Image (tube, rainbow, N blue to C red; front, top):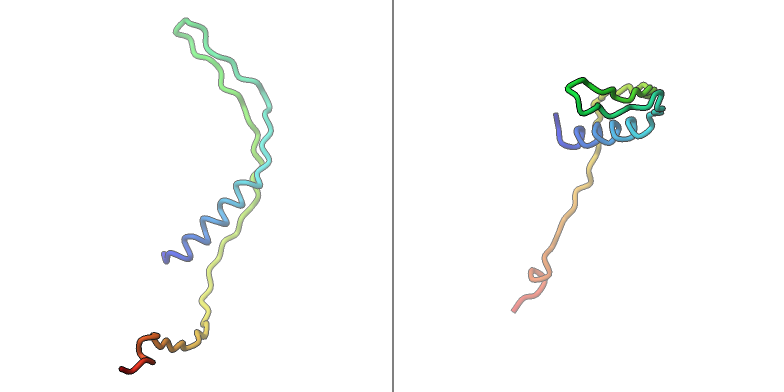
Length: 75
């Protein structure tokens, strides 16, 4: 996977996960000192659907000529 595509995919993933709607449905409780287990809180998460696709495009890039400042000066 190319680096720009990976960066774009991570950006889309970050936006997608930040748009989640998380609601706490039940409180949790700490376990007693006994060796009996406790109870974790329950959450309901409604995540948005994300469709990611790729496509090939041809992009024209202009030709740039660079002339160093020292090349213009002649001794």
